Every structure is written in structure tokens, then in C-alpha cells.
Length: 117
Image (cartoon, rainbow, N blue to C red):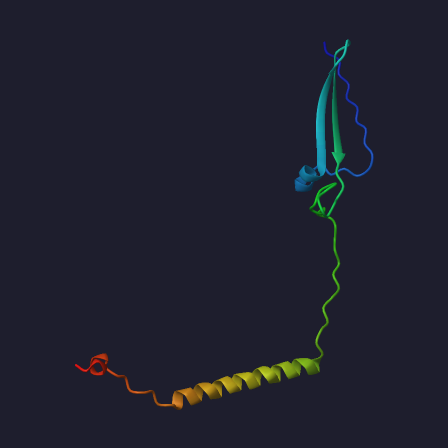
């Protein structure tokens, strides 16, 4: 019968599952014919992250967390000023709409009368 032996050698961090495993790992398989039989060699290399995409993968890994600086929160006085300004703008719009509604519309002119028929 056939005698087979498998050996694994690993070093460092290797992602094997998910989309990142497909994108970040480069895999090659070769078969070497020798006098005693065939030896199969499978090599997987994890590529580095490169934001420009020249020497590695452009997309970052899923477990990389970027912490952003928080936005400045407005003070209660600033919020009160913004609310007052919004209410004043609404009041001005309402007054303009009421003034437009109070104006009489010009009488409609018949196009036949303008043509002189």
C-alpha cells in the first residue's frame, strides 16, 4: 500500500477564513516527482497591508479599529440661540405667506380678447 506523511510548518499570523482569507493569502501548490514517489508542497503566504495597493492588499483587515476624535458638542446657550433663530425664521416665513395671501390676484385675461376677436 501507499505510505503518506503530512507535515505542517507555520510561523506568525495567518488568516484562513472569510473574505480577508481569500484576499490576504497567496497560495501555491507544487508536486515534485522523485525516485521514491511524489512529494506535494503547499505554501500559503499572508500579504501585508498597503494603503496604496502597490506592495500588498489595499483594503484593511476587519479587526483593525480606527478611533476618531469626537465632535465638539454645542453648549446649552448655543442650542437656545439656534432654536430662537429657527423660530424667528419660521415666523418670518409665515408673515410673508400671510402677506402674499392678502394681496388680490390680477384678473385673468381671455386670450381671445387680447387677440382682438
